[in-house]
Image (spheres, rainbow, N blue to C red):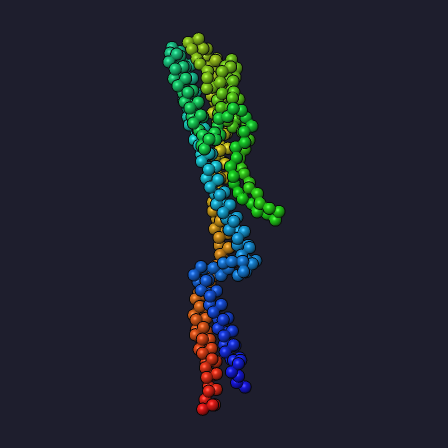
Length: 295
């Protein structure tokens, strides 16, 4: 039966056209944005996971920056220790020379005092972003750098790595550091402040040489500790970079559009749209055919 009030064929064709147009719009959005899940309504579960992981990746980026800052701090401290080792080695050589008979101990003392000033300058200037890892007013200072951002089922946390500075972890520590502590034996002055004169005995100079040797041993240990921390930071930096790439890849698997598939779908939907328009046109023209019955 044909009715002039209700055109069922046209309504069916119109519904088909609307469905095709909706699908075509979604496909065009996926092609233009490169995302098959661009908003929560596309896939609430995938969108939620992707949003959380993108946030975590932003935190990892901050961790990477913090690791760079930490590496700079450790590098600065290591450079100070390495330079101080060279200076103390030079002081040790001067002391050995002072044990020879007939040498001018006053001139050797002048050279040593210049080297001692150099030690103080090195320690004071070994600061990065206002933080000095080799000079402090006392021991117990925590030397730490951010190492990782961790998400667990109970929440998130930031982990750090480093150490608490003891007497042998600081060059200057208000009288208890490697270079400003009291000497051994008859030497009650620190390695950074002692003096020698024409009346200084060979035994006293031997004690100073022992102090220099002990300082070199402690600074070598400190250098090793800083070197180990440098290595750990380098490894963690590499891991954070790879982890960030893995998260990006995982998020992409959830929300990125398959461009080959979307391209094929777009071509098919464009064809379906044309056919639906033609079908609707045919359905609408059927009402006009009724007029021929009245001629």
